[in-house]
Amino acid sequence: MTQRIDRSDREWRELLTEEEYRVGVKEGTERAFTPGNYNDEKRAGTYHCKGCDTPLWSSEHKFDSGTGWPSYWQPITPGAVATKTDFKMIIPRTECHCATCGLHMGHVFKDGPPPTGERWCINGIVLDFRPAE
Image (cartoon, rainbow, N blue to C red; front, top):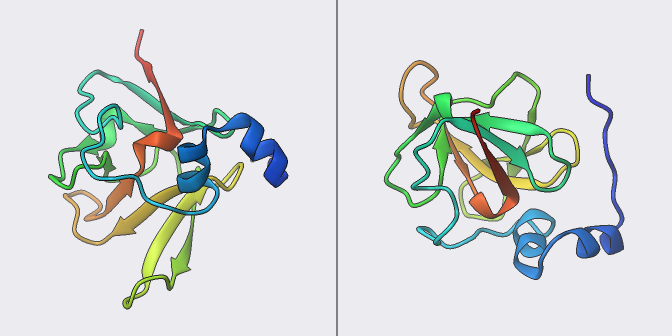
């Protein structure tokens, strides 16, 4: 089990850009189809949390959802990503965070492909991609 990392607001502001902070710490959402958000990334590799460098997503689980955000049918390992209910919209949604540092990743929906039927819709701005060697 990975040890939890807790950061103060000041530490987050020093680590992240203003937009990364808005999305990751304040639980915002980047615009769909934002250039550089990894939606169009096709190479094999691993997507790491920008807040703590924990590997969270694999290209093996990535699919094109057509939504404009990188989407995965499961996290890289069980327990890498934590969830909670988000009541910010009219209908409750399942929000996901990095289980290590708590950085907001996005939401998970039940309209994804087999084998899980899940669509983990992730803000690419809070990820760092590492191509496979």
